[in-house]
Image (tube, rainbow, N blue to C red; front, top):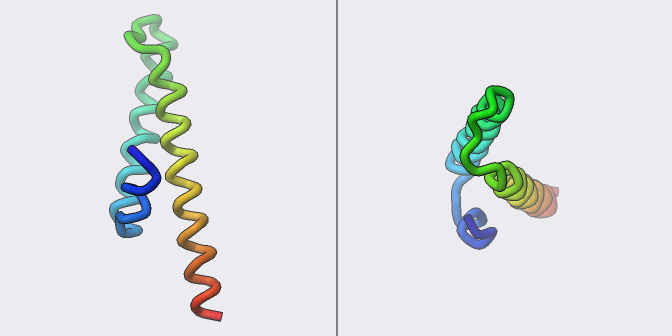
Length: 69
């Protein structure tokens, strides 16, 4: 998901996406432990998506802080 798409989402939608990504990462860790991982590069993709999401959260928080104060 692109940062531009994330910026257009509401906070509730962003929280939902973050929850889903963290859940998928958790599942991948179990698959890795069992030795049944199909796509090991997905770890990197998910971590990057989570980081992108957190960046957008921080931007929104900073923006709302400047407007409110």
